[in-house]
Image 1 (cartoon, rainbow, N blue to C red):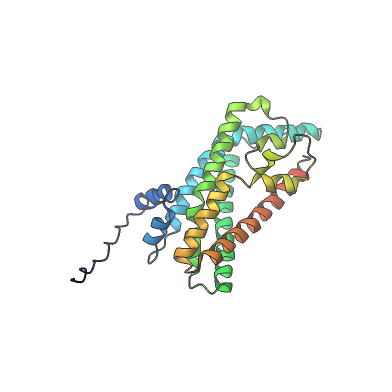
Image 2: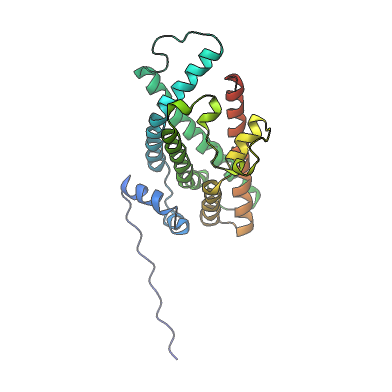
Length: 248
């Protein structure tokens, strides 16, 4: 019986900035292993981040009227007359967009740092850039979550915004709680971040860690879950502080 003929390696996928990255950001939702394998030797971050940042800015633009409504309610609650055009001018809009994009970059950097430290602790062989790649390619699930929030807000309309909590429709584990459950702001926001899309984001992260972090399934899943919980706690703390400051 003759030995099977050796198979030739698959040709490298040609890389075209923006076009290739946009396609990967879509395909990673359904085939994360293939997308990360394509980036094993040439990880990318900045173009995918730019694409997602633009989408985030567009979603923030859709939510801008609702954010202004909340600001008006806060001013009214405190008996303060808001300055004419407060937060609605071009400068305020641009600052808000830039702040959102910058916060997205900071969260990516922090998450990648956590993953890099966890990979080092588990004996993985990786780089910080590869962890940035894992982070940014798991982020489309967060963008989808924001898109759902924007869709729910627009369906409800501005008249449905009566408090800061109305800006955060329940789409996570908080839906499983009784309607009269009394929760602190931190716990309520934290539970709201545990949903189907977030769990799938953990799956994508774990697959990326196995491919680009060079660790086994157990270590990859542990690192993905730990990093998710840390970031969720950080975001919940920031949100709870903002809600408290707004009198929510």
